[in-house]
Structure formats: C-alpha cells, structure tokens
Amino acid sequence: MISTSNITLRVGKKALFEDVNIKFTEGNCYGLIGANGAGKSTFLKILSGQLEPSKGEIAITPGERLSFLQQDHFKYDEYPVLDTVMMGNARLYEIMKEKEAIYAKEDFTDEDGIKASELEGEFAAMNGWEAESDAASVLNGLGILPEMHYEIMKNLNGPEKVKVLLAQALFGNPDILLLDEPTNHLDLDAIAWLEEFLINFENTVIVVSHDRYFLNKVCTQIADIDYGKIKLYAGNYDFWYESSQLLIRQMKEANKKKEEKIKELQEFISRFSANASKSKQATSRKRALEKIQLDDIQPSSRKYPYIDFRPNREIGNEVLTVEGLSKTIDGEKILDNLSFTLNHDDKVAFVGSNELAKTTLFQILTGEMEPDEGFYKWGITTSQAYFPLDSKDEFDNDYTIVEWLTQYSEEKDVTYVRGFLGRMLFSGDDGVKRVSVLSGGEKVRCLLSKMMISGANVLILDEPTNHLDMEAITALNNGMVKFPGVLLFSSRDHQIVQTTANRIMEIVPGGKLIDKITTYDEYLESDEMARKRHTYSIQNEEDN
Image 1 (cartoon, rainbow, N blue to C red):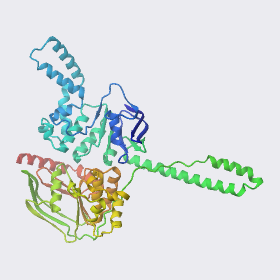
Image 2: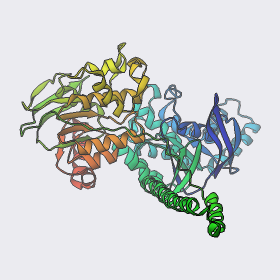
Image 3: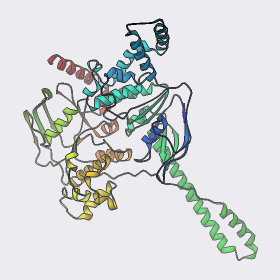
C-alpha cells in the first residue's frame, strides 16, 4: 500500500497540489487522469521519490518494493538488454553482481565463502534462479525477440528501448508499480500483452495513460486530478466519465429546485412582509431563505477541442487503385507487391508491428516517396490531406500560428483562419506564437487545423494521437467517426481503431498485405489472421 498525507506542491505562487490525502491499496489498478498540466506525471514522480513535495509525506508499507517506468531512454545504453531488465529489482541485481565478483577472485578466502553462502541464500529466497527466464519472458511478451536479449541497449531503436524499460518496471513482481504512459511507442500486440499482464497483476498499480480503451481494460479505480485535488472513483474510465457527468447533472438539478424554492420564498416575503397578519409567516420564510445554499458546481478544468472534417466535394466511386507496390529500404523489403482498391465509404486502419511499412506506404501514396515497383492512382474526385508521423519540417520556420495556417487556406481572411484555430483551443494571443516554439501537443493541434481547413475528402493520418491529451483524443475520435469521406490511418489507440475502421489492413513481416473488411476486434479474434501472420513471419525468416 502507498498513501499520501497532506501532499502539497507549489510551483512559484501556484499550488499544483494542495493537501492531497489518498490511499492506493493492494489488488487495485488506479488510472490517474486529468487535463494536460494537471500534474499527473508530477504526482507519479512524488510517489516514486524522484520529486520532493513542498509539504506532506508519502508512506509505503514496510518491506514493499516500488517500481516505476524510467523515462530516460539513454540511461542504460552501455548495458545488455537482459541486465537492464533485471536491474528493475535493484537488490537482486546487486546480489548477482556481488556473487560474480566473489567467484571471480583468484584468492578465494573463507570469509568469501561465508559471504557467498549468505548471498546464495538471499538470492534463492528472491527466486533469483528464475530471474533470467522471467526477464526473458517479459521481453518476449512485449515483442523483444530472444536474439536481442544480449544486445547492448544503445544498439536498439527508440520503440525497442521503451519496451525494455517497460519490461524493467514489470520485472520481479513489484509490490507497487507506477507507469507513466506505458503504451507510448508500443504496437497494438504489445499493448494487448500489457493489458493481460496488468489484469492478472495482484499488487498495486497506478498508471497514467491517454488510451481510453487501455484504461477501461485494466483499471479498477480512477483517480481524477482537478483543481489541485485528487478524487477516487470506483470502476474504469467509462464508469468515471458517466458517474462524473451524472454527479454534475444531479447537482444542477438540485440547484434548480433550490432556485425555484428561493424564488417562491422571495415572492411570499415581498407580498406579505408589510401585512401584519402575515408578518410572522414572512419572517419564518425569510429565515428559511437564509438557510438555503446553492451547491458550488465547479466546472472541470478540462477543455475539449472541436474537430470536424468537412469535405469541399463529395467523393466519387473511384478512390484509389494500388497495383504491385514494392519498396526496399536499407536492404529490407518493406512493401512486397501490395495491391488493393479503395471504395468511397472505406475507413481503413493499418495495423501491425511494422511502423516503417505503414509510414512508407503513406509517404508513397502522398507523393513524398517513390516506390521501387508498381503504381498507384487516385480518383479524379479525390483530394488528400496528410498527417505525417514526423512533422518537424512543417514547423521549421518563423511563422506565427495564424500565418502558418493561412498559407494552407484558400480563404485568407484572418477571422476565418482564427475560427479553425479556435476550434483547436488556440485563442487570443496564441495566434501570434511562433510555430517553432510550440509543444508537441500544440503542433498536433495545428496539423489537425490544417486538415480541417483543407476540405479534403480523403484523410491520411499516421499516428495522430501522439502528444494529445485525453480530451483531444476523444474529439479526434468523434471527428473521424463523423467524417463522410475516406480514411487511411494508423493508430495505437484501440478505441479509435475499433470505433472508426470498417476495413483492416496489416502489413506483415516481409512486406505482404492482409486485407479484411471487418472491425478491429473481430480481426483480432480471427484465428485465420493469426495463422497468416505466423506463416508470413516464418516465410520471412526462411527468406533471410
């Protein structure tokens, strides 16, 4: 168990948290939620001891081990992958290294023997003999193949490092597990594995995530940060949302009844206060009026953008034809003879672990890259808008936000352009901010403004939820569902894929394509798809 007593954190004159008292108990998974800037990650740092609060204390049950997801992706660059994972249990790893040092001595003494015996006993009590196999099992579950387990960390790419650090946090059955955005950079298969791990985890978990589906799957309680306080709700994210909305509606209804009663009493007092025969009743009503207090309904600090993609023209029947597309990058076949045709009502989710393949296909279809073989043809009624995975070139200039968006608008009126920015929560002086200094989330909101103002009837989105908060993801999800045109997109957000896509395409290892008209959940449940993915994987290994 981990609990807080009067935790307060002040940043300058602002109190990020004020006298927070909360208890996190064994057997529960808590989803820590709140608007951007509410302090979710900061609170996890306080709980883990990485950050000192201005006031208050953290209490952990004696003897319990706390583990948290490291955010420094370069901290372990000189260590092997398997060692990095086992470092998640610091004492166990320390014992392993002490043993190695003692047994490596040339002049092994009786004292060394006694020390080694003590270490062996402690090592066995901590299930040390299973440590390597346990670490390997977690790595395998997250998609880090056995041949990578003895690689040095600096040889891994970004997403692979994230998986290893997550394996480190999960390793060794910690009593308290703190996870800050654990699904970032994970493919959907790895996320599904993590969901099952946490569902079966019997200790205490506190997790920050913008993935609503993930929170719904794993959480037993929600800890909501708003206005410097943290309030607990039983149930998952959807239950929190419905119950919090219900509470507000009930308070508003109660206030409405109180307001009606106040009006009734005021009218009686006004009519009869000068009437001697009614004066006692008027005085009694006045006392009753003074006792009525309206509930203070404080609106949430959350702000939802408004995302509405409206095509300038209706799309025809001929949308996109792809024939025999192939692409090899650095000697690896990324796309292998891809062929498909899009229909005018298709919303296609590209899934699977090969992010480079999805991005490469999108870059080819938008003209940013040439295929090695094959061709593609867009229908004459189509117009495309593209949300790239890497947008740094878009903002490598000295434009203000308004100037930046105006260049993509047919209508150059500033008020018209500001209207699209306002939908994405840019208001007032925000319009004169330089795009070069925007945060990751602000840049994403700019790109979505650009897509809205384009009026395109085909949208191509490559991982658009990166850097977005829960409110913006919800707004984007709604906008994608309502969009009447054609969608091609990749996303790690399960709920977006499930609620939006009516067609699933997976580029499997080796660059082949699986194409299925179905929902995402039905696709995942398909034994045929699992067998095909396994077959392509084996074929690719044999080809190599």
